[in-house]
Image (cartoon, rainbow, N blue to C red; front, side):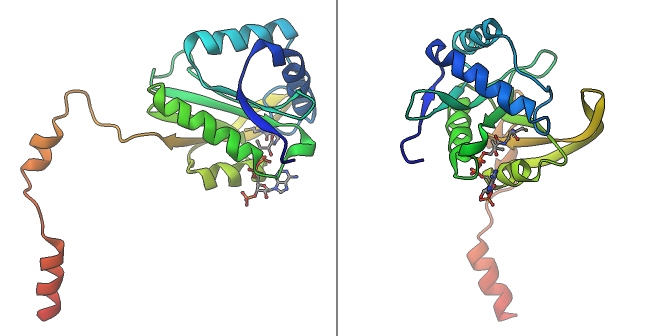
Length: 196
Ligand SMILES: CC(C)(COP(=O)(O)OP(=O)(O)OC[C@H]1O[C@@H](n2cnc3c(N)ncnc32)[C@H](O)[C@@H]1OP(=O)(O)O)[C@@H](O)C(=O)NCCC(=O)NCCS
């Protein structure tokens, strides 16, 4: 397990990435689809991520196969500064910290790309994933009943959010706003209170 590495995605891993995605999707319990995408779609996705500068990282096994992925992309009809995270690891490599490392690499990169918030959608039954996301700093922001339908079976989903930086309204003048309140000397205040 020590020999695995995390790399930026590239077309040379497209075949194994495609196979791994398909295997995880076929488990039927985790993703929003129950089978993978055609190889040409995966190649197109890798290229699109690179051209748009979206974070996309792969977990590479010693035999040079991609056995995990994590990407953060913008979605149509969503604010430009919100990225959606997708992640998956092939079964034999789970539970050893690689998912957390992959996501940390992608989130660090997303901060540099100007994303202010990262969201993801997760099946309510996917406790392992929810626990991992929570440990990384994601919080649950909304619950959608029957939010995903796979092969005719509906399941509820959580949307979770990770704030990359504090958001302030456009044109907000921090200095002017907070300057009005002056500064409070908390140490002095505590000392005074303890003497009362
Ligand atoms: C969710 C996922 C990406 C997390 O990656 P991972 O490498 O398993 O995650 P980590 O090892 O960093 O952490 C997983 C947690 O589950 C625990 N765990 C133990 N055995 C595990 C196993 N066989 N599978 C998953 N998690 C396991 C880990 O100890 C860890 O617990 P902690 O958070 O209390 O420390 C990965 O499990 C996965 O690909 N699952 C299937 C696909 C999926 O659910 N994708 C996300 C859809 S929203």
